[in-house]
Length: 166
Image (cartoon, rainbow, N blue to C red):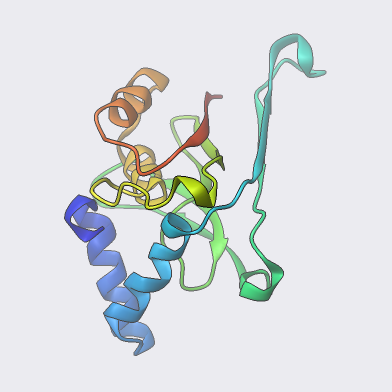
């Protein structure tokens, strides 16, 4: 919901609308789909003795229906903001939220949905995690800060979050 969105993300969505010629309402609806749909994805993080070199390795898969067609338009977006921490987001053309990503301070984020259809309707009076992840990447210079930002917002529905500091 826009009332819970970071102004930087709202401005980006308005810019996407202007640049693409697509109505802002259509883009807002498209970005609401992950909030309203039940799905379950996977993520993994390994570090220390679980890896050959001890470094943090984190991954995520997206279990969306192939009928959505997003996989036909993959992209990696590098954000170098005038205010905030530079970050990278693997995504799809037209999507500005983040299902996963990392910033130059070493913060890595991913999630796994865990809310079934029978739990609907979900809490829409909260920022969707895709927007919250972008805020966390903009503003988290430590794992403690990422957790503080995360804990300061209500959740839309049940997810499992994977936060790492490389």
